[in-house]
Image 1 (cartoon, one colour):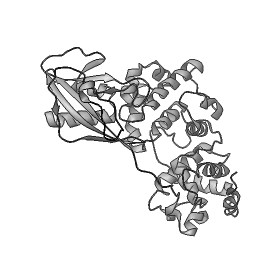
Image 2 (cartoon, one colour):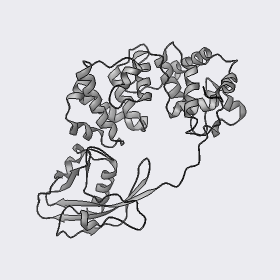
Image 3 (cartoon, helix red, strand yellow):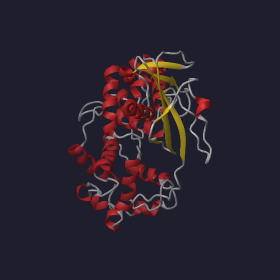
Length: 366
């Protein structure tokens, strides 16, 4: 353990880890959140549903994931069903959840489980980590929740809870290894799946980023951060630099049949395998931008520059797109292009950014 860890752990020496776990589990039995992927008390968790939900929940809120999860399990109720699905259908069903590499890995993982494991998920962290797209957090979550392995599950909620419980003042992200070690000291051998879900629920509903409800917390009496009066300040964060930005131009082309010109992005890279309206590269060079004429999907077209910009934030940068639009009388063939009826756009694998572009254009074109 980090050299700073022993005195932090000693500060809770008067509260055994087993007692903290028991208190949290008792709280969870009364306050557990009901979710479509979560087994009811006394039920056995379904590894497929646990895995699917954990992949969807990465970088995405519970509220957002709920409808997507229900649609996925209604359409593909087993891992065999998902493995047999066309990749285009999976990407389309995922559209709007973001971080689209997850969808590609999800499909690859389903195929691996169906083909290499006979449809049965490995029941250990090591075995799960061998699957496509399954990292340390996801493997621990599945092992604990689906198979009752005493695995330590650490997400952003858990990091916040541990930083406050142990009064860890080292700023993030440098504190991550220490917070994981501290979380591991509390992981019980009894009901590890419920404990993993309980500590995540605690962070999501009680030990919230702002105005934590300390009076409702089962660990309040032992919380070093609360006792020191610094709970809401934790975890501390390192200063961030200026967020970079990029710009580009998107081309919205409609024909007289109310069809929209789309194309597929390359399978790898940002928004890989998703549909897009044709666009220039997204440029980050100050004072220079890609010439729209060099990247327009059609020649000899009169483009209308629409007012305003479409703005979208990615993990590492912000993007601004100007939108050029055109209405055509005919339906020309465009290399790599597909004409999609506007009333069927829900079937396209259209990411949130491109849905914004289309809404922006239709709002001005009528």
